[in-house]
Amino acid sequence: MVELFRTFTSELGFSYTYDSDWERVDTKPIMPVVKSHAENSAKNDAELQTARCLQVALILQHGAPHRSSIVLAVLPNECLGSGLKPSSLSGVASGVAAAVQGQFIIKDPQYVAYVLGGAEFWAERAQGTAKEHPETTATLETVCAMLKSGLACWMGFLRDEQSVRAFEGSSVAVSGNAALPLIPKGIFEAAKVN
Image (cartoon, rainbow, N blue to C red):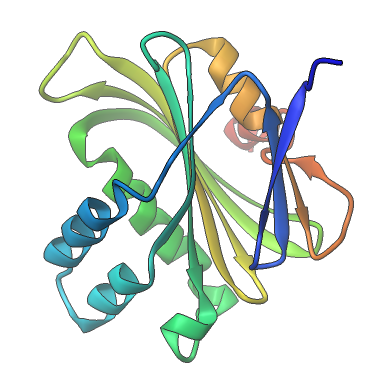
């Protein structure tokens, strides 16, 4: 029987289910580079501590030659000391989105906030053109969730409509609740109207 979906389960109390045709990439070889870059980019002690706590939990790629990517990063409260407060979700999440978008010229950003499984979520969708390779365009989506035990952020570098649908339709289950789509269907379109 062909496996249609795969599930990643985090120690932070959530699971993430994605299409099985996305290839999982080993994060161990790249973590030293990611941590070094994050630490060197830190502008203050709080950002430095956040960089030291950052864990890339999952990297997925799809298409040939790996046209689209999804990165899942987590920040456990135990590492941050006092932890993050729900009121800081939009600020922290927009900082994550800005860091992700640093190599792109951004247009048409959209922002939404919502609740899934009792956890607060914040998402941004934007169109991006790579600064150094203007022929490279992507839909950039960042979704962050404030969980009881830390912060989880999904970052999508999505090169085609199929990848956007797969990212938005992937599901997350928080604290044993039912799995729901990572981004509720139509939420960005509804935000444009309001």
